[in-house]
Image (cartoon, rainbow, N blue to C red; front, side):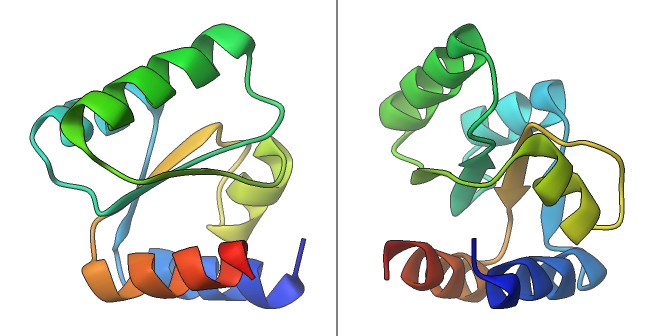
Length: 100
């Protein structure tokens, strides 16, 4: 994965535009608080399916990227399986970076 992506994700976290934790992100998806949800590539199949279904139903973009260690380190925390992005500008740029 591109180092610039992780640095940009860290910038979004410092701007307080990143939310982590499975329960918190699920509540945010339901309240349409997120413009993008990121899930680690090493998440369990059940977790991936749960977030794919929720994001599809509530029409929130979902991208699978990196490992839980990579995602956690980039935002200055321990391992994180799922992240929600609460800012439209940050989410648009992240989607562009991931879809290149």
